[in-house]
Length: 467
Image 1: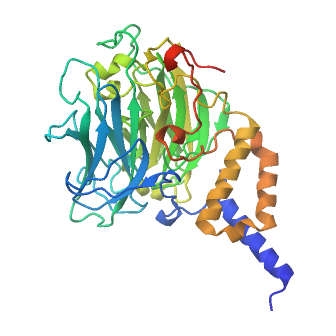
Image 2 (image 1 turned 90 degrees about the vertical axis):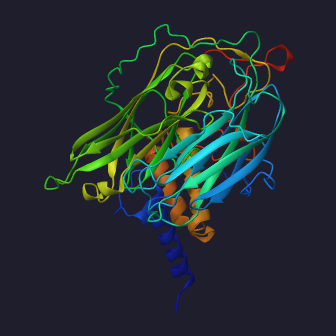
Image 3 (image 1 turned 180 degrees about the vertical axis):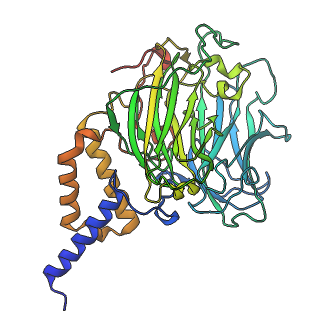
C-alpha cells in the first residue's frame, strides 16, 4: 500500500531527478536519446506546403512550422509590395540521432516570381559533421535596391523549399521552421558599395579572460542563450548542438572561438574529423558561415570565426559571408559536437566560448518604416550578468520540463526546493540561461522585443547601443 506521504515523496524525488537532468552543469551518460531536440517557437503557425504553385498556401510574416520528406518539394505563396525587401528562412531540424550523410542530405530554399524566375541565388545547406544530424538552414530573399530590375514589382511570389537525400540516409520527415521577415527601404540615397575603411581580414587573437561566466545554450534560435563580449562556459554532449545569441550593431564585428579541452581519456587515439563546429547566422536566420568544423584527436581543439563588420551596403558585396552581415540585431552562434566524439567524452564535456564584439558602433541608415527584427540597440536593454535573468531562465527550463515530462512532476515540492536552492547558491553566476521562445510574429519571437528609436513620420533611426 502506498501512503499519501510516500506518494508525495515519490513525486518529489522524481521531479528532483528531472530537474537535476535539466539544470546547467549536470553530467550524465551521453546518448542520442539524451540530446534535446530543436525547440520551435510556441506561437509558430502550422502550415502545409504543396508540391506546386497552383495550390500553394499563403505565407504571412512570422514563424511557421511544417514537415518535409526525403526528395520532397514544398511551395508557399507570398504577396510582396514594391518597396520592402523580404527574407524567407527555413530551418530543418532532424531528430538527434537521425542518420544523415554529408553533402548528400541537403536543404535548398529559393524565391521565384510568377514566371518561375529565381529572384536571388538559391541557398543550399548540408551537413558537415560526418553522420551527425544537427539543425541546418538559411534564407532566400527578394531584395529591393541595387542595379537589377528582376523581382522588383509588387505581386505574387513563391518560396520553394526542397530536401534532397541519399537512399541510405534516414527516411523520416524533418520538422522545418519557416520565417518571413520584411525589411523596409531606408530614407535618402542607399549606399551601393560596402565600406572598406578599417576592414581588417586577419583574425585577431581570441579573448583570454580568466573569468569564465556560465551560460546555457539553447536548442535553436528560439531559446538561444544570451552572451556578449567575454569568455563563457557551458557543457555539451556528443551529437548535441547549442545555440547562443549576441547583439551586434552597425560597424561592429564578431571574433569568435569555441574550445574543446584535452581529453580525460589519454589512452584514446581515435581521430574525429569535423568534430567541433562553430557556425554563425544573422538576425534573419541567414547563414554567415555554415561549414566551420575542426578535427579532434584528444589534444584540444579550437573552431574560430571572424566576421565582416555590420554594414547595410554589405548586401552588394562579393562574398556570401560578408553579404550576410547586413543587419544590426541578434546574431546567432551554433556550436555542434560530432557524435563520434563520444569515444573521448562519453559523459559530455566542458565547452568554452570566447566572444569578442569588436569595433566602435557607427551611425546606420534610417529605415522608412518599422523594422523590429533589425535593431542597433542592445535588444535586452542591459547586460546578461544580473541574477534576475538567471532566475527567469531557470524557471523557463522548469516550464519546458512540465511540457516534456508531465505537469504532475512539477507539483512535487522537492523539485521547487531544488530549484530554489540552486538559484540561491548560483544565480549570480549563471547569467546566460536560454532566452524566451517565440510568439506569433517573427519580430516578437526575437528573444526580447528590441527598443526602437522613433523619428518623425514613423521612421526608425539606428544609432549606438544603449546600456
